[in-house]
Amino acid sequence: MSEIILSIIAGLVLFLYAVSSLSGIIKVVVGDKANQLLLRFTDNSFKSVLVGTIVTAILDSSSAVIIITIVLVNAQIISFRNAMGIVLGANIGTTISSQVIAMDVGKYSPVLLLIGFVLLFISKSDKVSNTGKVILYFGVLFFGLFTMENAVEPLKNNPTFYDWIKKTDEPFFGSFVGAFVTLIIQSSSATVGMAIIMAKKGLLTVSGGLAIMIGAELGTCSDTLIATIKGSRAALKTGVFHLVFNLMSIILGLLLFTPFVDFVIKISQDAPIERIVANGHMLFNILGVLIFVWTIPAFEKLLNKLLPEKNLIVS
Figure 1 (tube, rainbow, N blue to C red):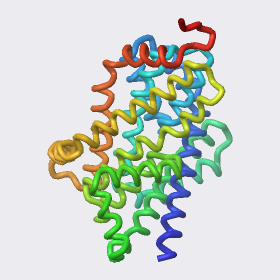
Figure 2: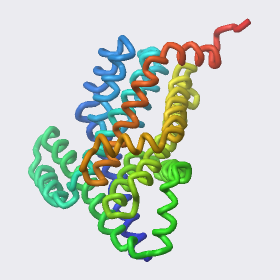
Figure 3: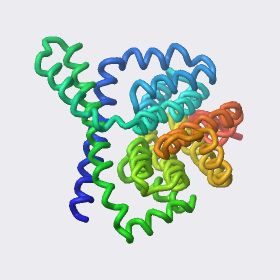
Figure 4: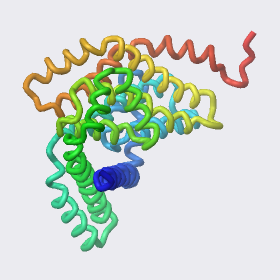
């Protein structure tokens, strides 16, 4: 059992290291372009949602995009209303990674590792070097997933673990597990990725995987709230909006959990279970945005009232 745990930890560390490194190097490569995209095409809420989706898909981190947005709001470069649209879009963009994880890409990780290493070894320019790093980190990410996938295989024969993991079929318990794990490792992508892997190995049902996914949406709010500390009221309101949006989406998802699971299964048709969980992640976030994007003006008015600017005098 200790070998299984150590292998899972090793795979998780590789995954988290790759996600962090990828986000950093991609910011270097396209950072200015990403910032320009955030600034140029956010003059209304719907454009902001689209930009948030695209930039998050590029950077592979909703937290990074939301934190960048908070920084821009704090500097009064982006308005609070348009920042809310970016936050909604970031929730859609982050689902792209779950679709990639659901593919059987782990076995190809050595190819990416080799290509990335060769490019780094022969590089004589920053452009080639950065390209090599991106490919190498993707290889590390996929190898981390591959390591975790192989590590969890024996757990199917462990009665204690199997009995415990079956409890995730209960949506509230499964959501608690997803939120707790994400709070600890600070990566909803990693939590959803582990759920997809365990579903693929027969350790999680569709219900269990989707319950964990829903909980992960709450756990990912912690780092964005931390980013608002000592910021302006507009920055604080952006972080609060992210939390409130996720909370309301989660509550709605739990209340309608059974029909949502049935809908995901029906839409996915004969897809393998790992693809069904990934589809559920995407559908949950898209539906949440479609429901709440129309309420942005109301949210703006409410949060402006609850958290007025410090220099305003409220009678």
